[in-house]
Image (tube, rainbow, N blue to C red; front, side):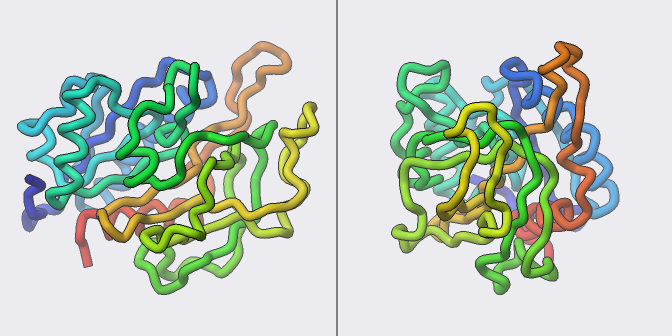
Length: 256
C-alpha cells in the first residue's frame, strides 16, 4: 500500500486531536511548528490533519510515514485502514498519548491488535507527575534510531508512562531507550505513587514485525498550579532528543 519515497524525499502525514489536556495540546502545536522546519532541512514533506476520517486507504497511500501526535483512530474503518497500512509496508511513529488505553476512560482498552501486538505495551499502568526531565540510556546502539546518540543523556521534561506489559519479555520488541536508574526519584508528586523510586521503564521502542517507533515523549510542563496554562517546557528544545526523532523519521522514510 505504501509508496516508495520519490527522489524529492518521502512524505509524512501527522494525525492529531489536540483537544484533551493542555499539556498534550501544547505539544501538538509545538510539533506542528518544529516538524515542518525539520522536513525542510532534511528534505521530506510534512502534512498534518485533525480529520481522522482521512485514515483511509486512498489517503494513506500518498504517504510513506504516518505520525500519531497525541491520540489514535477510534472507528472500526479507521483502525482497519491503519492496520492494513502497517501490514503492507507503511511506517509509523507515535508519541506519548498515542499509546494510551485504559478501561472505562475516554480511550478504552478496546483495540487488541494495536495495543498488544503492534505496540505490545498493553494498557496504561501509571505515570509520573509533575513532568520532569529524566536521564535516558541507550539500550541498543546498533539501531538507526539511536545512531550517534550518547549512551546516556538528559531528556526534555515529560510525563513518563508505565505499561501493563513487560516489553523485555517480548522477542519482537526492540527497546531503544529506557530510563536510567540515576533518574530516581523521578517525579515530584504530590501523590506518592506519582514518584518512581525504582523499576525498569522503556521509553522508546520498535516492533521488529513492523516499520514503527513509539516515543514516550510528548507532554510539556504547564503552569496548572497558578491556572495560567502557560508553557513551562518545550519537548523540542533538546538537541539530542531531536536527533533521535530525526533519526527515527529518516529510518522510517528509508533515507540512507
